[in-house]
Each structure stands twice: as structure tokens, then as C-alpha cells.
Length: 121
Image 1 (cartoon, rainbow, N blue to C red):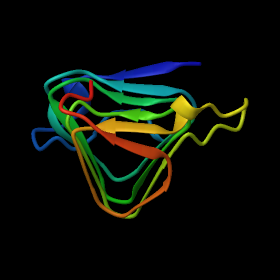
Image 2: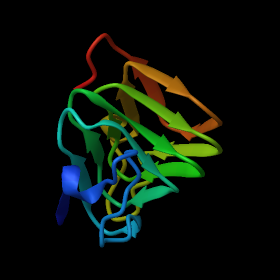
Image 3: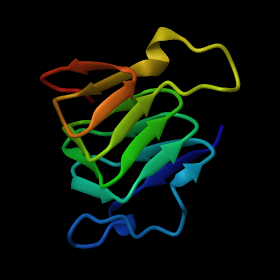
Image 4: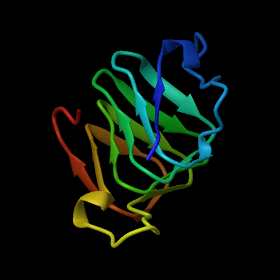
């Protein structure tokens, strides 16, 4: 499975995603480098995992959907729905549905188990 690595150059000065790759339907994993602060997306939908390294959080205006779990170094903030563990190409494991972060705010957790930790990354 492909892994897209997002760096500071993929975000503008306000933390909004401006990268060339559409991640609202990305077939693979997405990793965001550490210490970027809050990273803001309209929506995120990936078939693999969504992983944010230490020192940042994820904000999605609409929702977040990941096939193999979500891990954020800081918090997760979203407006509508969050799905973790939407696996269609193999049997789902318990780890696929884990959402690990320091805080979570927003809409509904439709699929997944939230684990609040002191340091999620």
C-alpha cells in the first residue's frame, strides 16, 4: 500500500492543507510530519491508516475516514463523522479501529474506539 508523507510544504501559513494530492479519497496511508501544529483539512478519507506524528493535531471540517486506524500526536477536531477501521480488502482487526489521541472534539464517532492518552504518537 502506498504511503503519502505530508510535510510543512503541504500546508499554508494557517495550517490548511494545500498539497497536490487529493486526500479525500486517497488509496493508501497518510503520515504527517511532527511539530506542524494543527493541520486543517476539509475532509480526509484514506483506505489505509492516518498518522500524525507528535506535536500536532487534525482538524477536518466535514469528517475523517481511515481504513487502518487513526493516531494523532495531539488532538482530533472534526465537525460531522469519524470512521476508523473501514477495511474492505481484508478481515478487520481490533487495531484497525483504534483512534489514539490526546483529545477529541466534534461530531459522531461512527466506527472506532477512542483511546485518550498523554502522548498519542
